[in-house]
Image (cartoon, rainbow, N blue to C red; front, side, top):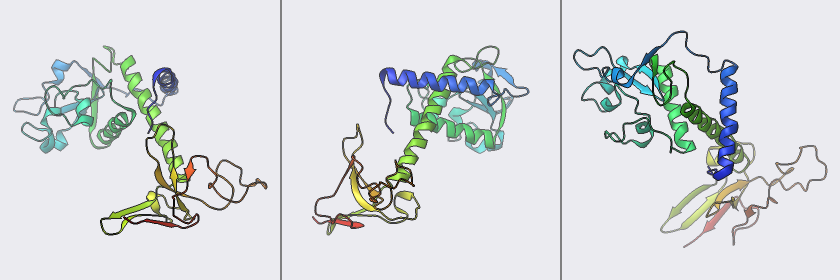
Amino acid sequence: MQRLCGRGLLLSLAVAAAAVMAARLMGWWRPRASFRLFIPEELARYRGGPGDPGLYLALLGRVYDVSSGRRHYEPGAHYSGFAGRDASRAFVTGDYSEAGLVDDVSDLSFSEMLTLQNWLSFYEKNYVFVGRVIGRFYSEDGQPTPELTHVEAMITKGLEANKQEWKEKQKFPPCNTEWSAARGSRFWCSQHSGGVSRDWIGVPRKLYKPGAKEPHCVCVRTTGPPSEEMLDNPTHRNRGDLDHPGLQEYPGCPPLAITCFFPL
């Protein structure tokens, strides 16, 4: 996934943030009927130890009762560091030190934000939401802060980028590849290469993407109209996507071969 930068990044995040705010106004982010507000010092009491009032953790400011998963989060358990705090950053980095178990996610990438979103979905599905933490992501009245809006905008942009990446992968599925010290490399196409099932096989080509240092092997459809044209366009050359400007044939491989060999 390509990173956006500079003014383009700010503009994209501004648009995404506006979409998040619009979604809230339309009820997609409607507040829970009732929830409790915690200050960090209060949440720290919920570590599941003797005499503690419970076993809670927070992710992006949302607090979950993880008592049903006690063996994972109780004192001495592998993920005990997550209990009683918001350690959102560690869900991505895997840094379970005190310095890493923090809620600062401001420098995470789009893909890392999507990882947080996946974890959030996991906790929503498997544990009981009990409240919100006052601080980085929620204000004293329990409303989202600008920092949470920024995170949600990043997630929105990441989902859009993933959707575009999948669309591109449907058009140019990755080749099957193998290499051996005895025989060298082999690239080939099938109806399921690259994890994309389809009704055509295609032929191997190098695909050059803007900003990428090296091309990668993709399978290219050889018949019908180009993907960018309407299916009923009578003027197309019936060459599928072979004429795409970002493609290049592999030297020494027949143009319509579904397998290319590159001996050592």
